[in-house]
Length: 135
Image 1: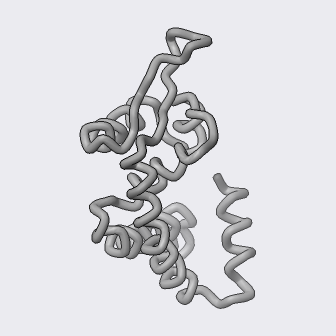
Image 2 (image 1 turned 120 degrees about the vertical axis):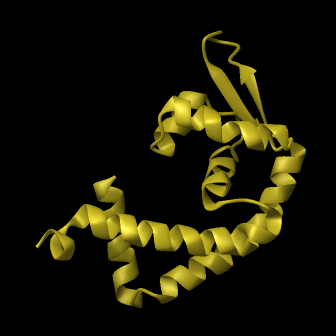
Image 3 (image 1 turned 45 degrees about the vertical axis):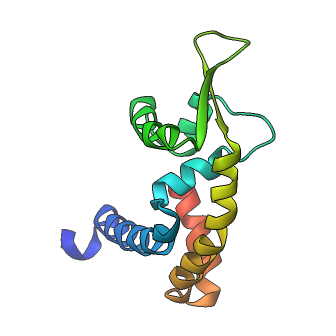
């Protein structure tokens, strides 16, 4: 019964399959789907606070910090102290990070299209809305 009806199990399985397809699509620019999402979350006019990025990505700060390290080493982002609150950290894309996103977005679009093709057209908007509601 659980195997056939568990929402968590089926969401995890679908998430892993979707993530693999995005990882494959983003491989030419050396990003995983998680790294792409993290970099995209920094693509804003003002550098966001680390806590806001963690909230957007539904990550705890420790996991976010670990995820930032390889991207920071690659020179794709910088972490700086918040001028308003010395305890806070701001995250900003570098020029290299932004240039990589420019390369990556068409690859992401290709991966997105591949994933969307697997769901019937009228259902995709409902699926996305339902996933947003669950999160």
